[in-house]
Image 1 (spheres, rainbow, N blue to C red):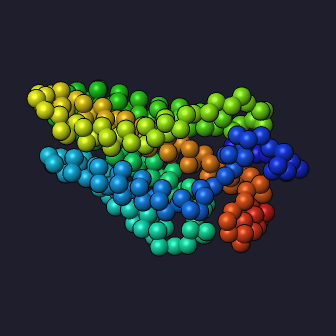
Image 2: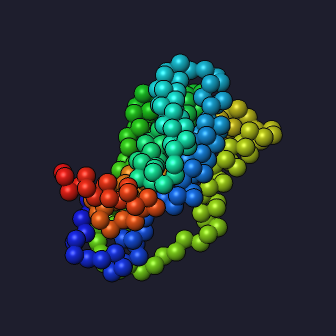
Image 3: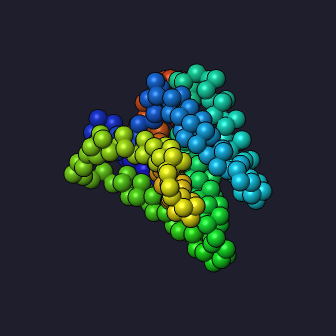
Length: 238
């Protein structure tokens, strides 16, 4: 993880580095946790996971979802100013649980289509791991240098589309009329893969930011000043 020279001041850092050192704004923390956990994960995935029932799918997804939900509830009942750092760690793990759960769900629908080959599922899992690696590597490269980079602003509509597309696609697929079972299941599998990739992005962005901030804690500004002093003292002690 890139460590910034301690002699540099925050105001002298390029924009992309300051963005990488910025924790979640306190006013957004609980909303982001609630939407990504209880809506995009729980509500959209639970029924497809349960029906039709495949025990192995439930055994490897439900325990993970229960644990991440308990963690989410504990964060929602705490002061926002005290969980700015922990919320990044939570979102990193949520990204892992969400991406894996939707990946497994997509594979479940592939199985329902009639794909039985173990080689196919092993290959897909390796692709899933590769995508995780590529996303995290991209985050690492983005914040690995103080060199000023040309700004490439993503249009606001693309952020909106990325947020609503998974759920909109999910709803659309359930109301398709006149499609055969094979085609419908195939479409659902692709949609679940898409949502899985959304969570992979959350995993890569949140984990990298968490460790990048820990490495350069002296340049970070938290809403709770005591948290800043505590984390700084912890780093010095190590």
